[in-house]
Length: 281
Ligand code: C2E
Ligand code: MG
Ligand code: MG
Ligand code: MG
Image (tube, rainbow, N blue to C red; front, side, top):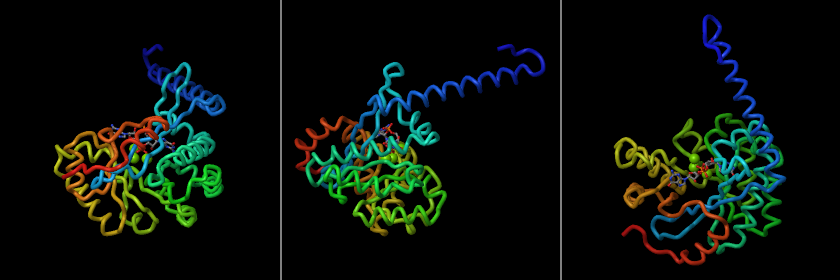
């Protein structure tokens, strides 16, 4: 684009905007096709009890493989799915697949499913959950739903009512990515969370920043006082694992324990390794 004289920058900028909008429309179209063309799969990643080494839960993480684009990361397509409302159908698919898969695992392992705030605004969420449990014969006690602070920003009675309804079904709710958003201590009191997942950005800086250290310790003790399970996300090293355990976290998740893997690999992993062995002496 020409960048000469008055208005040139403007025209250049307008062109870039138009290109970005077109790229987004193309992505949206591909995303609409992806569900019917069965391009989505689920991967699962273990959450491990730091005292016993046992896998307590596996988190379902959606994957999109497009024939031309290749693997598109959730950080790219989830926001588009949310803006277009496609997340409702995608979220329902994830919920159903995750429950079917989990029903084949040892009975002491739960499955965690990420929920978008957009799904929460939909009236049919509890019904979707009931249907997914019924179709898979998975007991409600083996399903965890993960929400982020983004959902609580709106802080309305509808959100609280929907959570209470889910909790009454026997499903538990985790607060994901804690500490990255608009962390309000009031959220922990007001909403019926069972788990608090400390975001991986804290774990990553544990060795180098003493203030992160203090934050993780504070959240762990807060969680203990409120009778919640505290999980440290993004554990990649032995040192991080020992540190978060010593600071009082109950569970860990991260590449050290296992990368996201197919449901079939997870089943084999659980059958072989879930006898439990001590991780921290
Ligand atoms: P999340 O729920 O916090 O999931 C954890 C993310 O951290 C996953 O990224 C996982 O692969 C990554 N991770 C786990 N351990 C480590 C580690 O040790 N090091 C590093 N660097 N990363 C680690 P992923 O799969 O790319 O998903 C990103 C986000 O996309 C998720 O964050 C979640 O917010 C969203 N997402 C994924 N699947 C779904 C879904 O089915 N529905 C909805 N609504 N959102 C989803
Ligand atoms: Mg999550
Ligand atoms: Mg998370
Ligand atoms: Mg995250």
